Image (cartoon, rainbow, N blue to C red; front, side):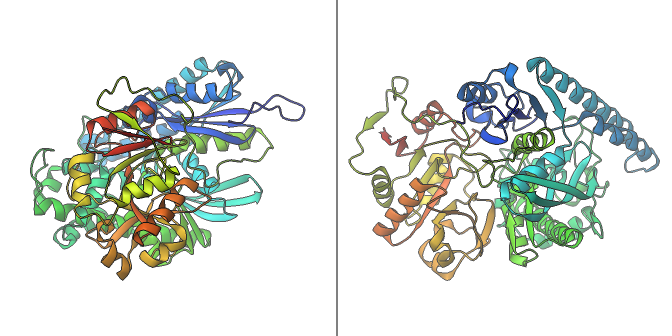
Length: 580
């Protein structure tokens, strides 16, 4: 961690960025413009997608930097309460339309209530940090700032697509780097609720029997097994594409009320598709086809928005943020279409990453110092290297010696068919394990996908597994044509991949790719290189170190629990080999 430094002629500028009181709670800390740490609360608390105040995340950041709460100069908050109020007033215009009349008053009341609640939360932050100025920011601005600042590019279009930020759901901005380390994002265009792609995808996810805000990726995977033609016309009507973006038809997607008591889909939608599926009910062809049509329309809308971003900014590169940016197949379609020369998705494109974006935006407002430590950074959380290992809580586990270089040792174990958890270095940012909190397996092992789903991850059998590949060999197996360091893009595959490593190819012919460089993750690059020497294949299966329903393991105890309670063969924990 960076020591506390003083700026020339003054006290240090310490900005704490927060995603708090909403899903994916997280905290980031900038000291004199340098990002010294970021972690999602779930990685420490074990509560997946927790909306709690990120107390453990903040505690870790302050302990690591020897900074007290009273030394924080600014708290950057990722929502702006008063900006909910125009939606409350606008909801009253819905009284004149039969499809929206029944929700107009509850919608207005809910937006007003959330505005008051958000203002109260900002005051609560002020009480926690009495010497800091609390600075609420427009939610989409925090997404935009993070997506562009993390890219390191001199200029780019910035497209943010999510469920809702105050009342914005889709925004386009122009990113510029006029001075080193001082990015700017200038808004170009915005769509407002109820036109929300994230709202629509979450609604159908719930209808199909999975958790909104958590299991949209399951629906994306299921889509590969369905026929979109069955419900194509319905989604064309329900999510019409317009010259200025898209809309949601209220006859199918009920107008949003900020309360879980109000369903998102109408009876008409269910009548035209299928009844809502309970989580324990069988998955049938109608569910596959509904997922396929939803995914197809999502890809079409995202591609249309990317073209609008190109048209409105004139930029040749695109940064994408917001929850819908985690739809790796849609991102892959944008790249495949060639709308932009290159596409970038930051490692934490969802709400958690807005803690970094908020902190960066506030720092740039209050200090002339440049930002640093954000570009390309993903290993930003706690590390436990060098600490004593105590297995007393897990009597079924034992530690065995690693009799060679750890990378060579791990590659040998994987080549022999073992499924191994890897816990090393600092916790990754974002929803993907990128080689520091991963489960690794050989793609050459017969039945490896079924074994991973059935006995290790305990999840649906149709869920695919992502490949990680040494970047210098990526073009031999994958057709993406650009780097994908954060596992955020689905790529087509080559004939060699179909022949040699079909385990990493999903039913739709794509793979959610992670390219690994020697500079980006030296240990994982060494493992891939050693595995290639043994097998001829520089590719491994990489999935997150967790089981279904649990967050990625941020602490040693979480990792050891995962080993003890799953079908993992072993865990390489900070260079120690732990097995059963």
